[in-house]
Image: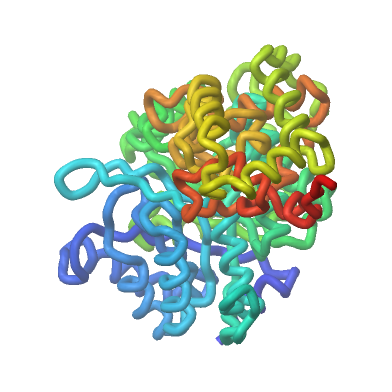
Length: 507
């Protein structure tokens, strides 16, 4: 059987993956029987190269993807397992990864995941111990041979896993402060070990072309790019337009088009099949490596899309692309030039003061940095530092940043906006894909801190440095400790360079 990794190396083939959404309940449920029947038809279809199985899609509890995946794998079809960070901490994700590799599941789509929407007796508490970049870095480390450490020395190295690591990106965003950070995070995902990329659901050929162009122009042209094709229907179009699914947008003109065809005798079925087939043709024409088909829950719909796409001539996609433009008024396009976005908002006095204070206190070699290292080292409790200094830290950081006292601070990396208190997913390595018009997917949170951070850095002319620090994995063992002491003593993620600077001693 040809593996998905091998298929990606054969550049002449245009690949097709199909999404299989898991169900709630056991394999005995009627919905599970239906899903298994759908999967079996996909297994038998030579045009389908892999089947992708979701992990608690939409933040809802569902059957673990391995249950549906095992019969598919044993039947000889490649399977991609979705692995998300919303329900599992880093230890559980590592355990899950060992299990998947042991059972023969080597294709992983690593994602942060949607914020939990439901659960037993109410909404579940989200985890988000690490994010998609952290998960990709973990899986890549396992592929390299995970080293077990004791007393600071490598004792032994575990057997290497063989994961083909996928990641998701989206540029179907309205504002510059959403689009550019997504591109920067895409680069970090590939740097950290992502082997292929799938774009998020979107319906605009200009953005589809822009993503391909951005990757080609930023040394990512060799990473396989898969286009997301979603088979719409009038009801789903309304849900997308209302913003009920994080990160997916259906503009008003597209909604009206869907409603118009939904009123036809076949409820728009022929239109939506051709619409999906045309999107597939555009991806093929733009040089994507393949497509990822979702939104279809029976094999006949998949077959109709594939059959319809085969009827198009080689250059039909160019005309389709002219028609397949459902952006929104004022939408930012990077291909028009990054300078085409709105003028940056002026950074406030609090941001400027924070920069000055951080530079003075936490720049190795400066007087206050050396003083901080010395007084925290010599304190009765080096984890907290002198009591008076700890009190000042708590007071100022709570007032200015709504600090949650995590002990492993990322303020300087997020333009002095706290991801612990102001991001629903505690994202340390860039934005998730769930924003809508710059706002967090979770009600009541407000504007995405990464959009705000981008604007602050753009005002400084340093927006391309937004994710220079990534990847970051927050050390939960420092929670409740002084973040200042953690940095000065080289304990936190940001202090590796500072930790290598010798502490000056007084004569």
